[in-house]
Image (cartoon, rainbow, N blue to C red):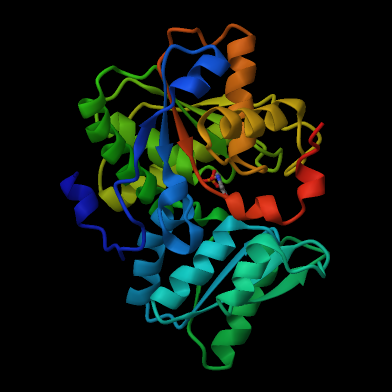
Length: 328
Ligand SMILES: Cc1ncc(COP(=O)(O)O)c(C=O)c1O
């Protein structure tokens, strides 16, 4: 591992290294010679996913700041909030979430786990949850609590260090697997994962291209946002920003965040029926759907060796199955 990264305080929350698996049947179904899946759905913290790695750095910072409650924002089915609830417990803290949008009644999927973990939440129907959470932090401070605010998706320079670490771990695993990947494909949401991977692969000297499949239109410019987060991460590492950037595959959102597309449904079913691999409907099915789209458009070629990062999120499958999946 990188000495600059080892110097940044981290609380162990994720079970790593996560497996890197050959998926020959899925590769064949997609029209690829070789596809590996990096199983970050198996990071372990409250059913796993990519947020565990980011929270290792964010919760270490909260602990050092003397926090007793973590505050963050998201959608009611946020995987980030569910993992924050679990990380708070592991660090001896409480967690409260402000969800964007009107109140939802049904407590299912991730929300059910939030409740089980003893987190509390409120809604921000009229303005961005990030505005309300800043106010709430002030109110809590005035009441004698010590809140620590984590940004949506855990995506800032500190959280992205979790994915710098993942990229270094992956580079080591690839040395044992043989072959140099052409693409490392993942979902692009709030961009912390993409930023950390891009920075980490550059630091590992890999020439694999990180490709982020946009899962919503809520980040207007993912290139710019990635650059910002990478720059902030480099400040934590006290190093210069390398000249590296992900490619963004932006045409696969469909009618909106969390809404299925023909490709995402096909991806969900194909992964399950070729390898027994369960994706989530909101992020990883859209990401694999994007890869299918790029292959079908001829931009990713049969002999391009691809690594797909499974970032987790499977609890959302149980939240509203009728919305996400229409079996024939
Ligand atoms: C399952 C899953 N995959 C991918 C992402 C996207 O990661 P990022 O927000 O770092 O872009 C998220 C973010 O919430 C997620 O929950």
